[in-house]
Amino acid sequence: MSKYDRSNATFGGYAVALGIVVAVVVAMALVVNGRQKEHIPSVDYRIDLASFSEEAPYPVYAPEGLPEGWVPTSSRLETGEEEGGPVTWTLGFATPEDRHAAFSMSNAPAETFITEKTLGGEPDGRSQVGGQTWERYYNEDESERSLVREEDGATIVVAGSSDYAELETLAGSLQRSEGER
Image (tube, rainbow, N blue to C red):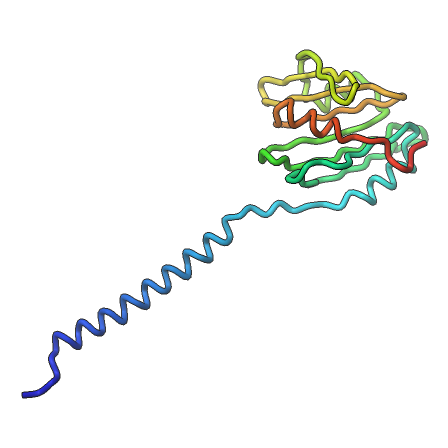
């Protein structure tokens, strides 16, 4: 009698095929799992900060020492189109709670700047941050919260989809820049 048994040959082929399929599925799962971690692109805002310090006719503030998890995602510097026009800097962040917060500073007319940066928010009380009083604004339709303070001819707005605690963290990190006037 022959040692060849067709049922054993079929089972062996199935086992090899199944092993290959399982290896491919495991490899795909590892690749997909590795890509699930969100990568938030970060921007280097130092050039805008240096230009802002040179252009702004008022003391310039910038965030320093934010806790881990704050990622700068955008920086926009707007200088006045005509001589003596407003100088505005906006620096956006992804927060540790996966929300958005932005710091903006300008010497544009305060009422207009506040309305623009708070998205038309309504007064919502006050916050004490680092010995400074910040006015709170809230836009219910956009779920946008803001902290506002006026100082030395400029208006500072910290705003975003974050809760007030995260906005207060950003506001508390603002320090007068080295290139201050």
